[in-house]
Figure 1: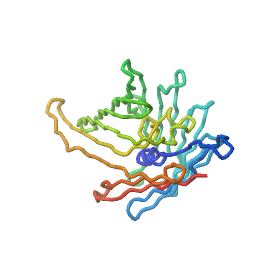
Figure 2: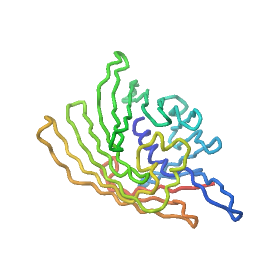
Figure 3: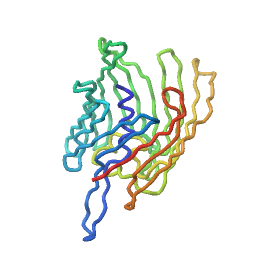
Figure 4: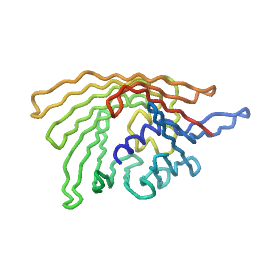
Amino acid sequence: MKKAITLLSIFLFTITACTKDDNNTEQTILLKKFINIEGSNTQTGIINYNGNKISEIAYSNGYKYIYTYTGDLITKVTGYEDGTIVSIIDYTYENNNLRGSVENYTSKSNGVSTNSKLRTVYTPKSDGTILEERFSIDPSTNIETKTANNIYTFTNGNLIKELSTYTYFDGTTSITTTIYEYDNKKNPSATAIGLNKIEFSDTSSLNNINKRTISSKSTTDGIHFTHHPDQTRNYILSYDANNFLKERKYNDINLNNTPTTFITQYFYE
């Protein structure tokens, strides 16, 4: 289930955009369908709206997400797998800015279901960055364990840097720095109502990402670090005649450790 939530951000790379018709009246272009191609595997997603607000995203693998709004703010996302609720994320705001979320989700392994709970706190810093702190909560005792820190840096509406610290169950800590670079075309998802409030990522930045570089190191004692080679991903972006993104392509290693080309195609209405 956690993988599906991660993929959700990838699938939402483009949501809405505004253009003008021949009479100079503004109209909204909505992304209706996307197709993700990973080697020989294909997955389709269909997006439904209530006006310009996302109401539902349904995937061909059986996952579905229902969005609940309070005004123009997304306050809940409910995840389903084959008709059964498997996750609920509740969002809280202060002065229309995200300050926290609580996620309850169910995961399955070898036919056994496990309930988990996560809490996330967002704090704006004096240098303009946003600190994200993640906590794992034991559902039976309600005891919290801090698992991760993320610091987000923004410039001109784009996420340009993410510094992440994560501690694994075995005590290993990884520190990862991700640098994002963009083209000069507007990312249509930047105008999606409420989405940029809950997504601190390249998918909700003002422009479209064309390069990502990851530097990481890990330690088990907090003193002796193992440095890992940088990972650079270059994106190939294609646009239609109206300058709306129609395809995003990149090469990477899949979950089976096999070099694979990843493609997302976008279809509007």
